[in-house]
Image 1 (cartoon, rainbow over the protein chains, first blue to last red):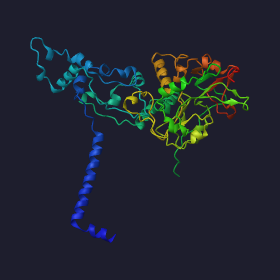
Image 2 (tube, each protein chain N blue to C red):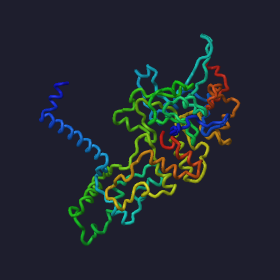
Image 3 (tube, rainbow over the protein chains, first blue to last red):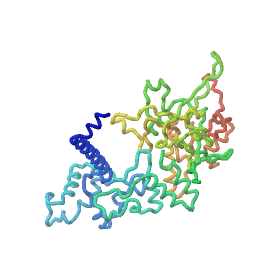
Length: 193
Length: 253
């Protein structure tokens, strides 16, 4: 023990310990930062432009209305519009592919290779949770109540921490006057099975 | 004095003789013991195969088993009819009262017995208290299938990991799907619309699933049949599964 104290008095050892502490701290900070940034997407899809063009959320994510998963669009769905944009396809003066915006070139590449765009889901729940979009849309919830105002976001970001406390709070608030509905909404078996 | 934290209610609120919501009627005179229900249940609910070695230790994980017993002393033995046994979804379940972490709860909405996998810490008290031996325990990560096999998993059901107790859920994912569809169309769930995997696979239609609180449904008529018996009825667990047993299997025994 005595030898450890003597070692600790040395300048070099103190410096070494300080460096080690800084490395661990920055590693922790980096790991924390990694959990807070949106995932890297294959195409930097600008939501804001598309929402400003009055395109409905359900046009590209139609699953929200009829099934559990809202779905992410395939390359065909994107190309249905982008394949006929007059800006690039004007027969009088067609713009060559090399002069298109970079992200659209990527999309054209996926269409040419006929492979689906490997979008990375942003709003995810663990395997033991079964979230269903359909009853939420049927209950009259608007997309932005959970997903935030997409007209102010470019690439999709997580606007709301998805955890059980958040789910249950909303479920309780929406079933204050209906005991029958509350039984269903706070039942474990509604989401966990 | 600071108020004590409120401990959630663990006991199901049940009344004597209450029918329950969902139920199964199994006709033992029709069952041929073909094990199709066992295979279908394992496929639907991501129940893994444990392999020969672990099965030797009694770690099989099937949620439903076809039970067959011998009656009498050898050589005058008589075979009882085949009896598929799954979780009986008791109205007063012995497993619920003993869970220290409230992982086995009674669903108020569907009136069935649930295992909440993310709460379960694997004490196995519930399995020891289950008179029907309906619960199975994940002793190892059996679900770590190599890549092409992992595609067979049903996305509607959790893939359970090691150290978690699990059991028959009456295929609650199918119940949810059907009730959701019925709600969207503004009607009640029709009789026979929901079918758990075992009932769907049964070639003899021996397993009938439906609403017990609807007196017109096929299952509630069958459960009032004069052939109807319940397993270990004297324990007062109020099982939701009814067995129909009438004929004598003379040719088998």
